[in-house]
Length: 278
Image 1 (cartoon, rainbow, N blue to C red):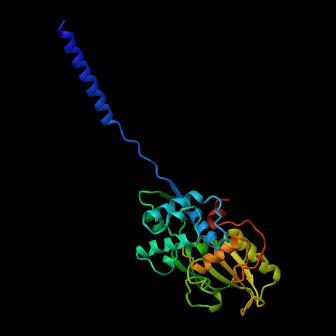
Image 2: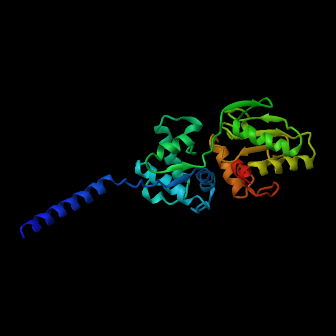
Image 3: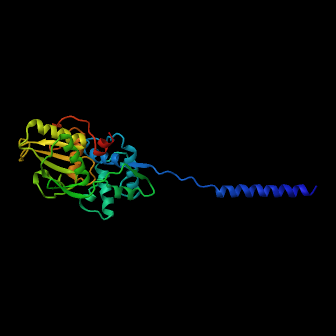
């Protein structure tokens, strides 16, 4: 009769020990970090600062919120602006973060690049749909980046002829009338003085179809000759002026200082990445 209590105690101990061992040995389930879609963030960072209100760019809210929460955690953005709207206050906060990394010039414009976006999100989020401007190179005698050249080459393939560039990218202090839009990447001008009206319109439409914000500029608008001005949407190297023009294009404006209605051909507004996926 005295044996049974001892056996029960031993069985109980073994059971508890086995359960404890199993609990320790069981692998811990990793918690998945939220994803920040870089394409969506770039779109919001172009459009939202140009809005007259605090509307949120469709499809960008969750990604922008994650970026704003990270900026808030670093003390760069007040909690009242953590709202999914990538407006001027968020642009300023992101610029401060870029400067804290040692970036200057267009690299600290407040427009997110892949490296800064990933560093900001360390242990907080992962970056999906990355966008890269690529290396600088020369094409048609002008400086472009790899992404912009690829876009132009595709436009020329669709057009069936090559264009003449009168100005490229990374040209700070170049043409004064450009108002700094060519200081960074993604910007180019196409000579159009000797082209017919039909050809000019066809070039603008084709550029828009592959992901450029593009307009025909005329002598009636300012002190310049006929040319086609284009900005590669979502180019991470965009200057502040180019970012503003991109946002105005999305909002149906002509990209000039007075922000009149868009006077170019109506096409679905897509980025280079969206065009390639389609």
